[in-house]
Amino acid sequence: MNPPSDAAPLRPVNGSGEPLGGNSTGSVNQAPVTSPMLVGRRIGEIISILGFATDEQVNSAVDEARETGRATGRVLLDRGTISKDQLTQSIAARTQLPYIDLRTVELEDRALNAIDATTATRYRAVPVQYLDDDTLMVAISEPANVLAIDDIALMTGLNVRAALTTDEQLDELLSRLSRSDIKKATKSAEQVGTSTAAEGQNEDDEKASAKLLDSLFANAMRQRASDIHLDPLENGSLRARFRIDGMAHDATTVAPHLAGRLMARLKLLAGMDLAQRQVPQDGRASLDESAGGATLRVATLPTIYGESAAIRVLDRKNVPTLDRLGFDDTAFERLQLALRRPNGAILATGPTGSGKTTTLYAALEQLNTPERTVITIEDPVEYPLDGVKQVQVNPKRGLTFAAGLRSILRSDPDIVMVGEIRDRETAQIGIEAALTGRLVLSTLHTNDAASAVTRLAEMGVERYLVASSVECVVASRLARRLCQQCRRPHEVDVESLTGAGFADANLQPFMGYEAVGCERCGNTGYRGRVGLFEVLTIDDEIRQLMLDRRPSSEIDAAARAKGMIGLHECALERVREGVISLAEAARVTRIE
Image (cartoon, rainbow, N blue to C red):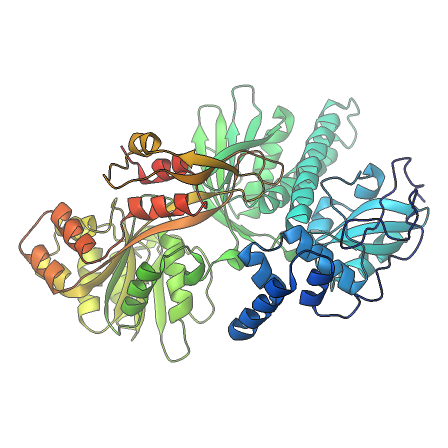
């Protein structure tokens, strides 16, 4: 059994941050306790007793909580009255758990290694220190996470005591552990490769490459990567990169002697032909629940230095609902009105990676009810949806978008989603379906909403058909959210706004935020993404402009006059709210 480290012991504290137990030198060789006066009280009372908010602030939050059905602590947090740390400390005091700040506590390597990062991620629980020879202190963010405590006790054969921390601190620590795991796997793989023992070498290499690939997947899931890129280098090694929040970051480098084995294992998992290396291949694989439960879409490509692979990580659990995408109230209501129609076409537009498909899937989640028949044709099918008939395009067997769409329309659908309108034939069939009583959803590659109608006309669809069928066009971009933990206040002056392309004469300076970087966001300054949207509703005036063959600029101006908020204005509003930086607003909206 591992003895405790010589590091300073982790001491449980009360809601005010003072050590519990009343002894200044303190030891944690005792059951974590809190003041009996706090146990079982309402969270608002505890917050007031601990001095985090006044009675008036708590009472006001209680009233709002009753009206909205939200928790009092959440109301106080959303108002900015208390911090996430203070809310967690209050919950800890109520549940008789010690609170720990993982940013300042000295963590013991021996405790951190008691379980692997994948297990810690699955349970959302991390051993942080030994309390004595037989007892581990485990950090959790949910007081009710007793399953993790019991299972870790069984795995380690030790007594386990829980300590409460915030979700953000736990996520940061789990991310660090995942990065550490991948480095260990890479180092272990390199050691296997430099071994001089010939016997069992191939088997050891197979195990090392398998462990390294599993670590790559686990780390990608932990860091919220949307894609994994494996790029061959001139020396035969593989450079692994993760695309996080739309930007690619180096993850690790796979040694030359393992690169081929790792690619072979990946192709085997994805159902590809191992012997075929000179032509591109596509495949799919699934991770089990212990590894995150995601689906992987794999595409290989032969390059001058060997095969590369692009792996799209499709995590169905993270498909957002429409109200979480970032629509402002006006745009959201306009889209909802269109979705409530029994027929017509709703188009999502934007460049690659702008959130078009995510928007349509969120709409489908809302529209998918038992009384409706929903059929999609996609290339590829991104996320399986219960209750939806999803068709995968297969051009080699004659199943194109147009051919599949014709068959779908003979299957009595109420709602049809076409993954992408790529040609005249698909556009024509989709528009005619919208005119004959179906609600049709699809994507189109244009820079803004107004350009969608002219794009369809350029494909050869008659303007009167477009004007009669299209009800709504949603243009979108995805912008990186500022990390709420490390963002820094920053005055946005008129000169900066003008330089970023905002030329409105009424602009005034305001206080915004800029990116800094910390461990929680991987030192990028950003964590997560938010959608920027403009929603064009096609009314009689817009239809007449379309029939009169007016340019998209006039259609855009008419829509703005009727209250449409454009992408640039939406981006600037997010800058004012402190959600994104001015630099990010300029980047994603391509302001000149």
